[in-house]
Length: 102
Length: 447
Image 1 (cartoon, one colour):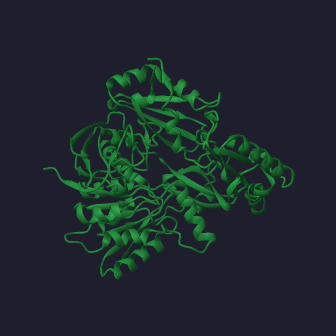
Image 2: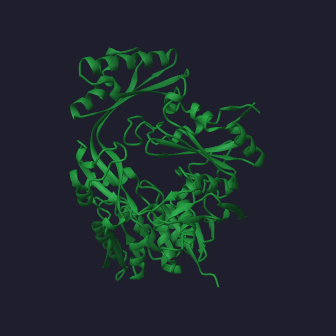
Image 3: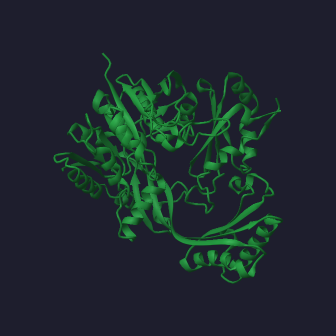
């Protein structure tokens, strides 16, 4: 079993209450593996995206990367939620121990 | 013959370090140095400061940043472009003039860019607020600020007039970098979207400063970065065809490679095919990076399509009060005691102080709380309970921290290190207004 931490780097950013997750594969082989197995649904489930919201994935093969948009995860964004890390900057590391069937 | 200019990143947010910019200004041979210091929250907070606390409405570190970068160096000083005027570009311009005179730089031309403050415009147009889906006049909270994201045009105008320092408010981050390209290369602002897209990509890569050179990237195991305490900020050599090479000073910390560049390219970019700015809708989907030397990366392939007809506006509303309390539990059954403590406080806040439990957030710091609802609570040798909530009045907000502190003598065993705080909250929302409704102008001052 491989985990994301073996295959890619992850950086998160925020836009309103949408968490934007950029996953950058370490090489071509890792990118192909992620393209096959790291679906928008898998990432959405990992971050507990609500059932009435739709996570999306955009592939960026030129730079071996992909971008996920996870609506609603930040609960009102940096000024709307009283939690400490309103931007969701810590959340990139939540993806790293997700296991892929490989 | 290709013309090339060198643009440096002097700051990537309001709280950024100052010394990396000073090093760039002194040793990098820059043509331009950019301080990007405004987030959505920062501009609203600056407005609030200006209005309610009788304090400066511009970046509090602006004069220190200017002083560190304008000090007479051997050779030329770079021209400086910043959105650090925040809610009060005019006063920021005056402050810059004072700083220049103090440094003996009499005659320095400082331009201020005005017109991003659109409170009157939004009151008249009454646009739909994105988050609520209703028109502005239906919002019950008091509007504190409204700032339109403005593009590169007024900066270009200021540079054309010979300004050496350009200070604006809510100028879009990449526009701070795109403007000198348009000024130096004479790019058309309509019909040359691919060039504007390339220039915007350069601005996007530089706008967070140290995030391109290993900041917000470093991991001691998978992504080791040397010298983060002396992180070197990036600069770019941009040619008049939009091709760009990014690097940093060799005697500074950090790293710049295709991995750092790719992470920053995608940072906060929800749709890489449509990165909307006031100047162009940039498309990053065909961008490629190539390492061309130590800490040196060549970027190519950005394109662009027409700019939007509407400009985004950040609205700041009074948003009530935030109250917060924290207390630590350590050792055996730390998590259980912290949970018990949270139940006590929630009951007290509801029963005694009349605060809705839904308005409160409970975080068991140390158990994976930063992952929010997405992660199960794990056992930890030390847990810090944090209870916070946004409420309408200051007294209720204060009760939140008070009830946490009262756990000392009324709660579970071994609670220590309680802290409490209260602050007023600004709620940030967005809308758009027609481009034609926003009028910018440039004022030039001489030191």
